[in-house]
Image (cartoon, rainbow, N blue to C red; front, top):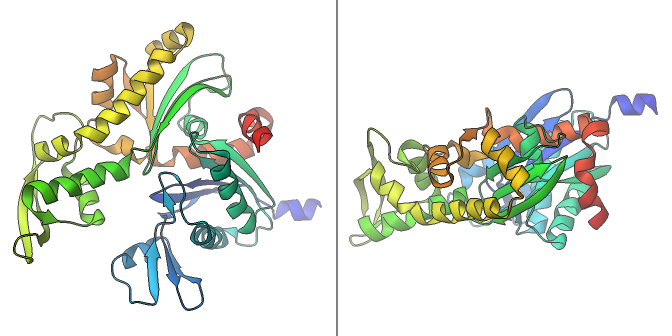
Amino acid sequence: MGLLRHFTKDIGIDLGTANTLIYVSGEGIVLQEPSVVAIDQRDKTAYAVGNEANKMIGRTPGDIIAVRPLKDGVIADFDFAELMLRSFIQKVKKGVFNPRIAIGIPSGVTGVEWRAVMDAARRAGASEVYPIDEPIAAAIGAGLPVTEATGNMIIDIGGGTTEVAVMSLQGIVLSESVRVAGDELSEAIMKYMKTVHNLVVGERTSEEIKIKIGSAYPIKEETSMEVRGLHLLSGLPRTVTVKSSEIRESMSEPLSVIIEAVKRTLERTPPELAADIIDRGIMLAGGGAMLNGIDTLISHETGIVTHIAPAPLDCVVIGAGRVLEDYKNLGRVLTSRLKSL
C-alpha cells in the first residue's frame, strides 16, 4: 500500500468555462489550456484538446467539430466534457495511479450539475472526487485566512460565472453566483461592433479587443486599435478603428450586473463580518480580475478598498490542490457539499 500511495498524487482541477487548470501535489500547476475539445465525428473520439483544439474553432472540416463543452461554469455537453477532462488528466498523470481529485465548481449550480461534473471526473480515472465551491478555493489560492474567525470577501470573475462570497471559519456565510462574466463581456463587444460599426467579429477578436483596450473604469490616456472583421453592408472584409472609451461603454451592462451582485451580497452581510471586510478589503480573483480598472470600479461603487490577487487566474486551482495537500486543516471546506451529494 505504501508503494502504491507513493505513486498516487492528489490533483486539483479548475474546470472553467474558458480554461482548465490542473494542479498536481508536490509539483504545482502543470496544465493551463483552453476548455475546448475537437471531436472526430466518425468514431466520436477526441481529435485534439486544449490549445490545439482552440486553434481549430471555426476552421474544421465537416467530420471534425471543435466545441466548448462548458457554458456558464457548468457542463453543457457531458460526453464532450468527459472526453476533454479525461484527455487533460491523461496528460498530467505520468504514472500516477487513481488520483484523488478536488474540483472547483460555481457555488450556484444545482445538485444535478454537481453530480455531472463529479461523474465526469470519476469516469476520467479518479479514485475519489471532492467537490469544492469555487469561492472558497479561490480564497485559499489567494492567501486569505479562511480558517480564522474573520470576515473575508472574494469576487471570482471567471469565463461563465461571477462568484461573490463572504467567508469565515472555512465556510461560506453567504454568496451569490451570477452567470455573467468574461464571456458576456466579450459578447457585449461583439454586439457593439455589429450594431455601431456594422462589423462582424469572432470571439477571439472580441477577446483580443477586451484585453488590449478594454477597461471597466475611465483611464488617464484613452487608446484605440484597428479591428478587422466582415462588413455587414458590403459583405467584404473591412478594418475599423475603435476607441477604448467605446469598448468600456459596450461592457457597461454586464459590468453593472456584477456590481449589483456585489452590492446585494454586502447588504446581506452580518455587521461584524462587514466590519472585517471594510478593514481588510475585497479580494478579486479569476481572469476577469485582469480587466483594466475593474478593482477601481468596485472600490468606487462600494466604498471598500479592492485588491487583485497576485495570480488571479490560478487562485481556484491552487486552492483546490492545497485542500488535498493539507486535508487535515482544510478538509472541512468540502464537508457541506459531500453531505448533500
